[in-house]
Image (tube, rainbow, N blue to C red; front, top):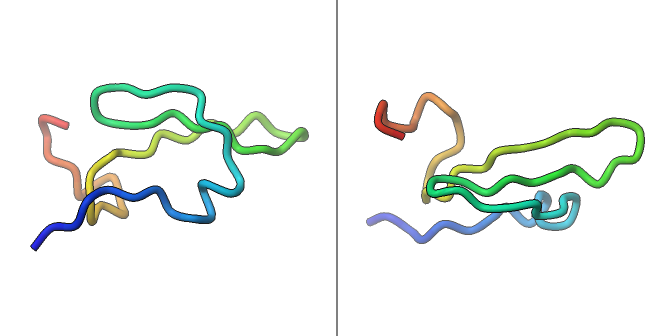
Length: 56
């Protein structure tokens, strides 16, 4: 059984949501020294990029 997507609590705490795309969220790490941008696929049970389908 697949669970619904939930953003990891650490990402929710440490990042600012910049926007949304069809597949993912665009986050910016709340760090004034480095502009870290993170794409987070909104798919449940995905932890690594290789787990996405080719279409994704």
